[in-house]
Length: 222
Image (cartoon, rainbow, N blue to C red; front, side):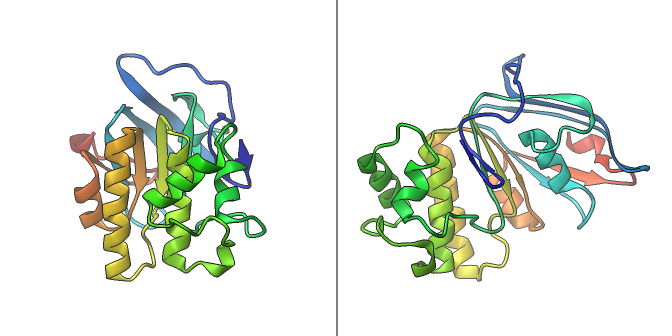
């Protein structure tokens, strides 16, 4: 199901299962914005339970790679193979402001009961806040709600675009620890973008460095 730019459950394009034991296979030959080529020969795989971090300078094309991998951007040369269920976590929580915390889960995930939604909220430290609307939650609580929504559907693939940016150190540490725990429990194939190398080294089993013009992966890090 979709809302805005949040995709959970159903892919946005027809999907072929990834082969060779990989949950995700990315083969981007080229990506252009008008006459300008921004990506070339970006190839990598992500296994189930593996976390891959994508790093590089601002504006290099990291978020463009995520949009292609997720299926939000289909105008590129190449192909992506991905599993059938995925979740995305963005810099901003992108919640439904006119729905309760509980409804932010049940309206996205078909078949999720209120009891299951409450259990998911409790797992991220929002127990008893199911009836609260996003505006009544702090930024940290909204980020936790976004994580609960992402993991409630047990996604096979998780995409995160700088989910810890703009948080103070204490809150960032709390969110990192919670995300680590949820990834360990659900074991999705995870791809996330970060500017913080410490976050990449902590969460990821592999770090990919996007460099150059047009951008490609540093070969020694693939």
